[in-house]
Amino acid sequence: MSGLSAMANDSVPEDSPNPILHDAKGHVVEGPVLPEAPQTIPEGVGTISLEQALAWQSTPGVVFVDARGENSYVKGHIPGALRLGQRSFEQDYPQVETQLRGSNKIVIYCTSRQCDDSVIVANKLTALGYRNLFLFEGGWAEWWKYHRKKQP
Image 1 (cartoon, rainbow, N blue to C red):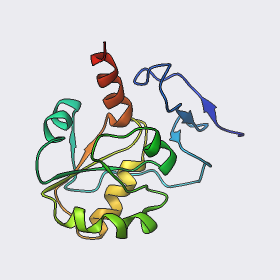
Image 2 (cartoon, helix red, strand yellow):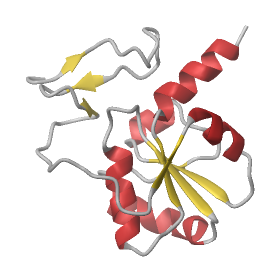
Image 3 (tube, helix red, strand yellow):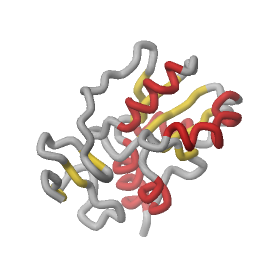
Image 4 (cartoon, rainbow, N blue to C red):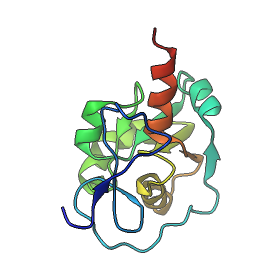
């Protein structure tokens, strides 16, 4: 894999089940590196902390969306999260549309703070008319690290 390297990331424990790959610019990647324009958070989309994600995780009407690829999702995800991968959005969306349309809030996450997948999915959902979108910036890495520390 030219241009990709597995790098240590302070938000991901060394024994993480999902190694983090970075491209030459330090962006987290999951699969082949595809040139993309830098992503910006759509207007009206909020961000939430780990504490808020933990509080909302079991709240009725709040849907968590994992923007990572299928392999990462299968290896581990926030309990109850729907998979809506940024690279497979068009194939995944019909399977989750009903749950998304019935939600009060949608929390989108990806691997970590350095990952753009959640921003890309937020842009696509915004274009489809969704509101009340929030990005969990710490993503799976922060969630996993928090729960790992809680285990005996």
